[in-house]
Length: 138
Image: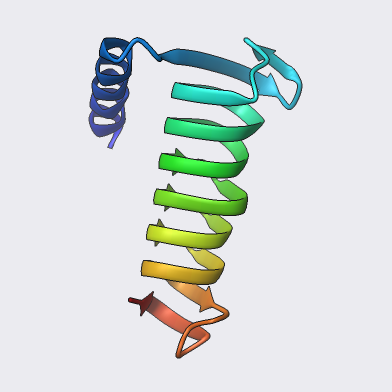
């Protein structure tokens, strides 16, 4: 898993740098970051962070909070206030709209086009609002 994450980091860093829109944000906590940017196109690394919009990879040790996420979000607790297009990986994943995959013990979303895999999965506007092991809406 560690080799996969390192490889993913390098690929995203290379791709975003070739588009001349790369940015790396390193966060200790909300508001304590370098640079203290509202939008990240590239890689976000930290202990816990809030960034309005991330395109790329977000890897945090405790929690990751975004409004809009496009890419891979990895933390024990992932929260998106609007939408995620991509993958959320963590113990607890929450978003208003997901287009992609949520992988965790507890997954929660209001609306989804994709798949949830975890112990408990909630898609509030889905045909089956709660399921164990997996839930999906297409």
